[in-house]
Image 1 (cartoon, rainbow, N blue to C red):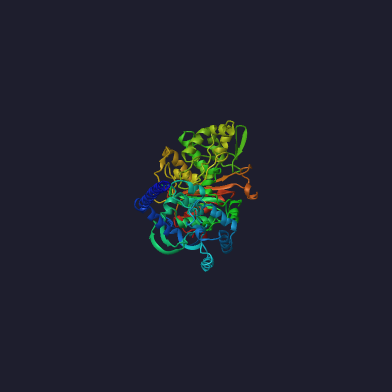
Image 2 (cartoon, rainbow, N blue to C red; image 1 turned 90 degrees about the vertical axis):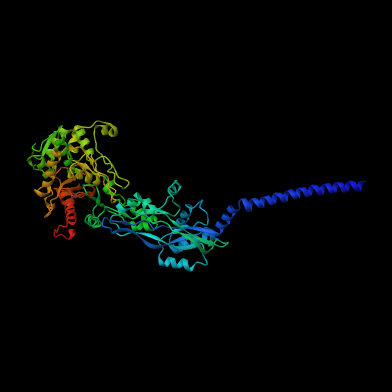
Length: 594
């Protein structure tokens, strides 16, 4: 009896165990079927990806050429150092070796790796670029000992003009973490993007689309063969409105000075030259700039990274008189025949204001006041106009607002009025301040680019142009609602400044008539006739000259600004003369104009 009971219990256990085993085998078979059949393609793809590596191939960045097709920025072959963290056994030793070969601080290389946190280990890290031939040889020789390093052929940006046109063209820099995190940029760690100038403004068009190289790797991740290659799309070539010859000549003429030059076509706003001095060499940024080099740039008291053509605003001085003259005629405050007696000074609102010419100009009308830059005539006209009408007309001519140029970082300048004074200074506008603004002094501020736009509107018959740097990318000029009757006497006065013995008579060129206006804006308070050339540099006057030619049918506007340069007629005007001579092919016999 007991034996039977034991047999039945044993058989029951066997049956239960058999069923459990059968169910387990069924589940296992089902799992194998699901993995191999249902998810087969997925796991085949994973296996293939484990065998293959997709490595990016940098697309050549687009070149930049001037209006004549001459190359300004191009790409040269270069060598970059890549680090594959998945192939190194000792990352610390790898960094020590790289720091020794590259002669760079190890901490600096470690900081680069921080940017690649969260990036798969097998994705190469760009550790250094533009390796020298000696550095390439060192890493090639050490391939067996340091297989984690790879030297890759790449492209290096070359700025053919060096410091010339640096502020206009800009430079490249490695993408920052915040740029990588931004959706839609398509950037990856190690990518280079435009930092300033044209490089930044048109970065997307210049960058192109990267390709990729597919390589077969072994179990240790070592590449053993190339499986395929997908070609990228090179960046777009950009043709600028810039004239390379005029740009370089302007750079040379301003060398050693602090200031800016703007040359543009008054008919459509096409920029022909845009200079800021001092400048920097953008080729320095083709390789990661060291901390010491960067410190030298940012701590330089002359601020070479600042684009003075559109980022520095100063009182325009007597150049502003052309706008006051237009306003006076348009508002009916003055006629071309209105005269003022200039004894060398005039009293307004209980204060005496001096003319720049100590002995005065005698009796002058509108054209004579522009020709000889008589302050007293404009003191009286400014008083009659008032600050509100002066401000309104200044804004019509583009002052107090960004011009809309393609480049970033443009300042708006300042056109003061009653509302501004109460909002910013918390007190009303004082009438005596209007007298100073009428001759381009006081709180009034303008950039060289804004002055160029303003005189272009005088030259082209009252249309405000939008400066642009890309061929075929200009916008139609905007009418500023000023009558020809208000512009004609002013244009005649600007013609006399150069061609009838005015303040810029030395600018006169044979065969081409230039019209323009000199300007000297004070930095510190002093008598109007005082020579500031003996003062410390930072206390000297600023020099302006705004011009266009030919006077009858203008094709070119040139504005020269020299910071703390002294008198506009002595410093800024001769530079403009040489540039007009170059553009219109006038032989002056001067080496600078040849």
